[in-house]
Image 1 (cartoon, rainbow, N blue to C red):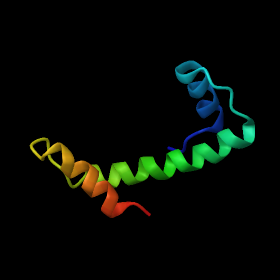
Image 2 (image 1 turned 120 degrees about the vertical axis):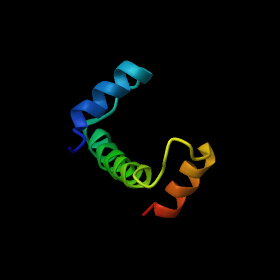
Image 3 (image 1 turned 180 degrees about the vertical axis):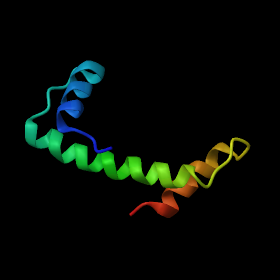
Image 4 (image 1 turned 30 degrees about the horizontal axis):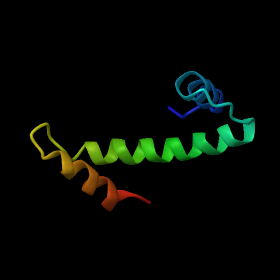
Length: 64
């Protein structure tokens, strides 16, 4: 599932009261998708009982 720039614009407006240009929303959609994929991959290697800091360090190791 890819992140739609329209969704990014709507979310920015509703959640942060920020108006994004179509170009900026498209750029952010790409970055959000990259981050989302990194989080999905990292979370697959973690369990509920892991220390909270383990998630951050796992993300840092896997970041592109």
